[in-house]
Structure formats: structure tokens, C-alpha cells
Length: 512
Image 1 (tube, helix red, strand yellow):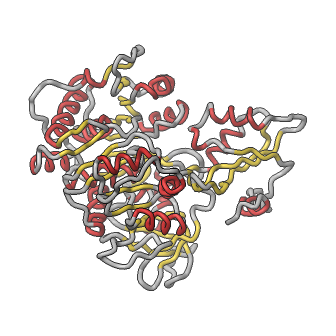
Image 2 (cartoon, rainbow, N blue to C red; image 1 turned 30 degrees about the horizontal axis):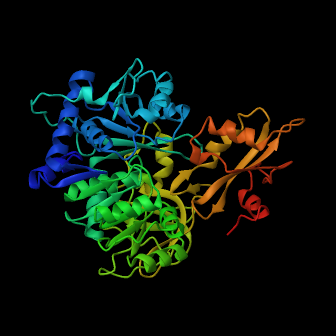
Image 3 (cartoon, rainbow, N blue to C red; image 1 turned 90 degrees about the horizontal axis):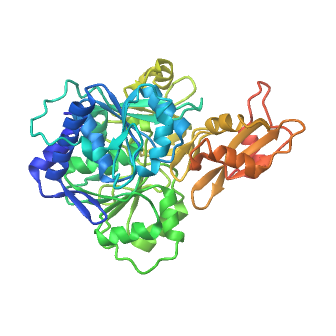
């Protein structure tokens, strides 16, 4: 089965059921499937897209994201979604690496995409969703003009379920994003295993506020819901009161979020009392859930939060706590492995460790990626001994529950989004007054943590922190930009010259 077929099947079973709700717009399954087919025909006939081609998507959580994503897959082509907050150099790197031929974006990011287009030789067409009256520059056209009016049936694409259907780019310790190749088989296996644990059905209404460019949003909020024939309630931005109002208005039953969202809802004065009686379950992932936040949210809204986990490379769900009626929830754990997925703890020699001993969390299962696009060395390193090495340190208790005790040693998680310090450091080092720098995470009540830059200025320079931050904002997405700059004469380093970030954080009183 190919991924796009989940919409065709749900449309056949229940054509009038709402697949998507976006503000006052409801799109039933039959209409959604028709739009996917129509756009796929147009992409093929108007723009020459065929199996294996890469098509970029830079959209918020709006219906065109879902339509474009599955129209691309309908042709056997490969979707390459990116975060709409990225700047031109960042998206140019990704789409150049992927060899994107066409990109779908929207007016707010059009200027950024057009800047990037000049740096991507393969990029031929820019399509603009929700263009309205926006004047379009040369090289861009309204997405609506590509939808085909033909009723000619499209043949099944000449691809297998083991071929890539999406590239999701994730930064690594080198600071350069790598394209995680996921297949229909990877994603559908992950969906089915998650459903076996969570038991969602066609009556669900899920609040889709997690970004669809992210693996969590794609698998759990979009594709899982489409597969069971339920309804995804799309929101393009998160504010606590808007989220609560939407849950009340559309009788949402499932709310997946990151810990920063739950904390923000708790700490925001309510505009009025919200009726969330329809809400039966919450899911949390993307960052560690503070126990105080979890308990306070559950007490206030009388609903359980199930914490789970998984990296993009695993489609992404690897583990989750069972719902209350199916077993024990262990607060502080990321739950049990989902059915068919193995999780073990390895030492530095890739030998399995006993119960409750701390080592690296490794994963094996059909949800594990095909590999990193055009990067066999990184793939081989990540897949040592036939197991995907997450880089997270953790343990497994006597009941099989997995606990993360330390994240990837340098990674910063800002509101559920990974920020890799090396990437930020590489940008700051381009500033003419910066001799050396280190970026670490600083605890933040709203976002979990934020980047903090410790900078060693070049001799005879006196850089202004505000000017350095302005420099960074021009070159990086806002969530990656440090919130604070501290100047030092030197950084603590090991004998081999490596910055000792744990020591640095201790000196700055940032250790928990």
C-alpha cells in the first residue's frame, strides 16, 4: 500500500465525513481525494512531475499542505517539507541537496522562497497557495492554476511501498541538515503500531497544531487521522486561548502537543471558562515533559497526557505510555515500545546493557528510515550493528518502560523544535568580531529552553550584543537565534581542544 491510498480508502468508506476542518471550512474525504487527484494530474501534465522527482513544501498547517503532500505521493514523487520560519540560505541548502524541481509555498514566505530559488539550480517552478490578490513575481504562479479539470484516471505510480515518499531534513552534529528518507512502509507501519497502542478511531477529532513539516505532525496529526477516517482540525499557529477556543468549538477529542504548549496553556490567563468535555486524551512528545506541568494540566482539565517519544529517523514514534484503560502510565517515562518496535540500551561497544543501566537508546523496526539521502557515511554511522542509534542516553526498567536520562549531549529543544548548537555557532563565527563561540541551552519557563551564546571577541573589537543578534536573525530562523549573548576571554576546552559545554553550563549556573 502506498501512503496516498489512505485518503482514497477513507473517501470510499465515508465520502461525506469531514477529513479536514480549517476555521469555518470543512473538507469531506471525497472532496479531499478529488483535490489530491486533480493537483497530481496538474503537476504531471503542466509541470512534468513524475515518479522520483522531489517537490518542496513550505506551508503552515493549512489544507494545501495536506493536498500537496499527498498529490506529490500520488505521482510517486517525493515531498520535501521545510519549516516556514527558515531563512533563504537554510531552505536553499535543503532544496539544493534534495534537487527539488517544484516548490509549493504561500504569500508570507514567497519572498524568502524566491531568494532561495536563485541558489537552487534544479528549481523550475514556485507555486503559491492561498495567493488571493497577491501580485506574483516572475517564476511564480498561483497553485490553483495547476489543478487539472480533466477526469482522466491516473495510473498507479511505478513505485514500491519501500521507495521514499518524503525527505524530512534534520540537522546533525555537523550543523548541516541531512535528508531522512522515509517510505510508505515506514510511515504506515508506524501508524498501525501506534494505533494498536492508542486505539484511535474514525470518531476522533484531532487538534493539528503541531507543524506538519515535522515528522510528529505528519505521522500522528495528518496521516494517522486520514488512515482511520477521522477528522483533523488544522490550526496554523499556536496561542493558548486560540487552541482552547478551537478545542471547544470543534469538540476536539485528541490534543497532541509539545510540553511548551501545555505549560503555556497552564500559565496563560483564560479569557473565559472553556468547555473541554469532549477532550478524552492528550499526547506529548518532542521534548521531556516536566512532571509538575503534566500533573497540573491533568488536574485542571481532567484529562490524561500520554508521553511518548521517537526521532524523525523512526517515522517518528518509537514508544508511548498506554492509555489509562490499557495499562500503567509511568510519569517521567516515554512509555513502552510500540508493537513491532524493539528498543534496547547499548554501551559504547554496542553491547546490550542490563535493566536500569544507563546507555544509548537504540531502535530496530520497520519504522526505521531508509537512510540519509546521498549520505551513506552518516547512514552507516547511525545504523551500526543493524540498530538505529538515537544519541539519547536512557535506561529500561524491569517493566520495559523507557526513560531518557539525558538528551543528545549538545542539542537544545526550543518549544519542541531541535536546535543544534554547531549550526548556530557556524553562523555566529561568520561575524567579523567573533573569534570563538559556544552555544548552550538556557532553561526557559515558556519554551523549555532557549539558546545562549558565549562569545570570545577578536582582539581590539568591542561587539555589541544587539548587533550580533541582528546579524544572526538575518541568517537563521528566529527559534535558532540566541536569546542572550555573554562575552568571555576564553572558553573551557579539553586537552584535544573540544569545548567543555557541561563545564561551561555549570559555570553559568545553567545545570538543572
